Image 1 (spheres, rainbow, N blue to C red):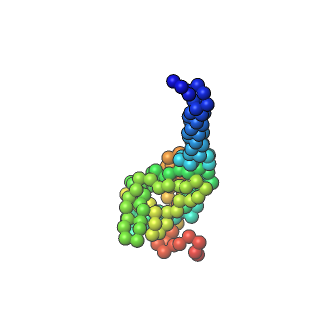
Image 2: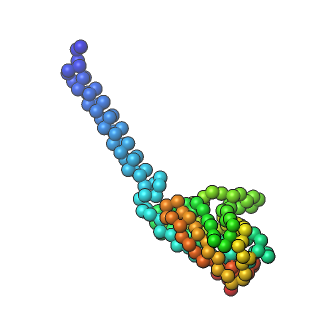
Image 3: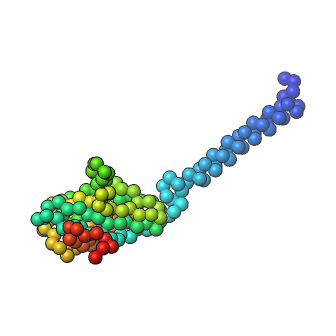
Length: 166
């Protein structure tokens, strides 16, 4: 075949090589960019603390809500379960203006916070072993997908209590 060994063949080979190098190089850049963004690995492990926790006094030992803030100074995580030796079951819920739905996990963003507060994400606590009284502390065991379980003592407050207000 005429021209395959000459300048035309060289140009085709060079062009094919350049396209291949660009494709491979672009793929490497995409892999490098995606490595930390998908699972939070670039931010390292989650570093979690719990603040502003409280349970409004439930009526005569009935169902209660639980509120708290999970602060995260590391990589992202998810709250995947909550239990307590003092309660039969605890479920996680997400509220909107018109609905409340049970969820199986709640995101804890990297270098951010998960807030469980009135009118939003919250816990529903049922089946008390002993009806909680004002001033009691209830143990909650918060289980995270990556960070494991963190136990916190949550005070039982007046029904009208709001964090930051006296």
